Image (cartoon, rainbow over all chains, first blue to last red; front, side, top):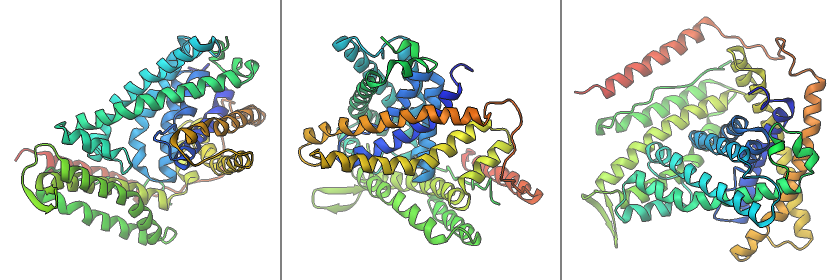
Length: 198
Length: 239
């Protein structure tokens, strides 16, 4: 616990929080059907450990909520889980930078699993707090699933399972590429860096 | 200073009789904001409106049209039929949301983040936590400016930010790379700056801000908690 939170991690977390938010905005500018707002979270989870990753995720939603509007604060729970999972996958060595195509596939699979878990965690929040909608384009998917006969929670889960796994897979691939591009010396200095350099 | 002001009165009643309560309470929140001279009522109202409007429209459309098991049609527009049960559900969720979000907005428009974190540190949040929140808030505008600069620079090199989805997706990597790598480069310096100021020293830290928490405020908070408890039991009690 203490090892996860050395000064380097402490300096990294706010930077990662801001990366999350700014990336979310860039994706909105590019009008891509993705979120990519957890790149920083996954990065901290990988570099520093599960708890640090989870805190980064939760904090990002909290700060974003303070700055724009509190509707995304409840999803801090999802963001926390994403960070913790990223930390565990890194511990297992699934995010090791290198290994060519095999390394890429491993990172992608880790992202896919994270996406499925994220959808399962988000669904009850979206269903009970927001009645299934978020005011974004993905609401059309919820309407579609409900018209097929699903109830509110099944419909939000369906919506999440369509958008989250793809989003998190791409997020993990991006993080893997970043880890590959960073100097190995810099990566290795983070608490969990040893598990990331090939 | 209204450091810990948060209206917690949320009617969770599922009954139709309670539908009128959230709008009334939101009006009360507005009055509260107006009382606090520093935070103009207009800003609160505008932010609340722009935040909630898309959610309300979406709620009315998705649940009004497609709520599972709804039968009573009350409004037919061409092939679309709005149903009573769905709209009731939408109103219930919408009112609840409006209230919670409104309360948060009261807190956010009346309290500076630095005051909020200072108050949290006073009641036991580790100073590291306060640092994380405030550093992120301060860093954001700088990073947004940098993202803008990177986008402009890459466009000047011929990067297309518009066009087919595949083309826009390809624009992602040339933007992510410089942004994230540049930001991570800064982490080292930030860590050294923290160490140089002995931030991790296990000693009590002094704060530039001191907060005045009057007994009346403390009493008010406890009364709010009590009132929430009463509302909760009153609405949930089996009649």
